[in-house]
Amino acid sequence: MCCHRAGVYIGVDRSGDLTPLRDAAAGAAAMHEWALSQRMGADRAKLITDADGREVTPKLICDAVTELIGGAGVDQLVVYFAGHGVNINRCEHWLLTQAPFPDRRSSSRPRLVERGIVADRGGMPGQRCHLHVHVREQG
Image (cartoon, rainbow, N blue to C red):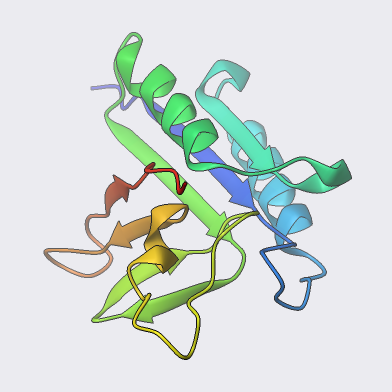
């Protein structure tokens, strides 16, 4: 029985006004190259990074996932993320290029998620990963 694998490899070095990371985008690119070396077809391995000043947005990630799972079918989807993030109530929140940051004087914590990605490990740790994408725009 064949297992059809696909992957989305995401790297964000610069997120809002946080200190830039040095190797998140490069790490995602290295993982993408590794996946290709393991015979994951180029049509099944998507690389999304902020290298060369590009922005990483929820829409880019949603579009990549939709394209991969909407095609011929995927038995296993690998989602790799390298970048800033926070863990709130055991739920990861990825901070993308233009992630808004809460004003410490107000209760704006929900804004943290609005341009980020929430990866809920749910179920058995290490076994499954549910990808919840929040794409509401501010303004």
